[in-house]
Length: 326
Image (tube, rainbow, N blue to C red):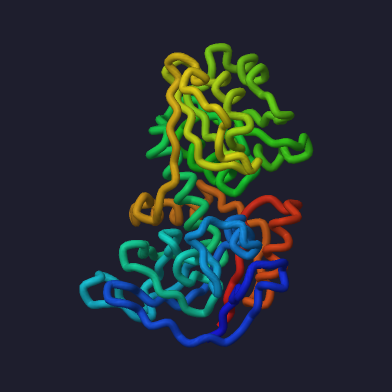
């Protein structure tokens, strides 16, 4: 089969399209014929050699994908030809991922679904929706009628979280560093876009004097102290991402957390996105109730370099998806 292989870390040239042996599934693993996959920041990090020691080389990157079952154990509950999604769980990091015509993964991280949506739409969703849904449901326990602040709102997870939260019935505030991108936030249902200059607490308190009920933190530790100031007493901050690159706080003390404010985190896996929830999201997109923020579709493994280059440039918001045409 054909695949994109990173033999050793480097620039875009490290993404080599080559022929490799067809992967054979281990017991209780599933082989999937890949139809589409999203391209993510973490795969850029893998290509550059900046990932944690879990990642070894040579490696086929790709932490998510959608396609059809090619081979599965009879007791897996999966059948050949069935539409499925898979993501994370070491995929593209400790074992080969989705930048290929076929991928093998543990059966437990396979999510079956049925949809008539194009593969490029389904391919945009697994990691993005899993992270957004898990952050809101598991991390924050967001309820209808609550107020949510998304810090890092023009990221793919931020855009997805806004659509899910609005569908749930929440009031959504969301940040961007550029005033020109406020329209992108409104387009996915954000009630109040905010321009983030590094501090936003005063802006939020002008709109919500008592503070918001919940915050999805995607920018990271560099702004966390300011984020705490946006939350009402007994509100919750869920730390999910660090777009600014800072994952730790030097000389951290728990007393930096305001009294009565809760801090949690989310870093889940495919099992945190139930099949019925993912199916519901697909149906909501098909009926127009939810939006899939697809930035650009690329055709074939040869365009993976273009997709990663566009992600690094950061000029096109939304999900970058590679479609593998038959």
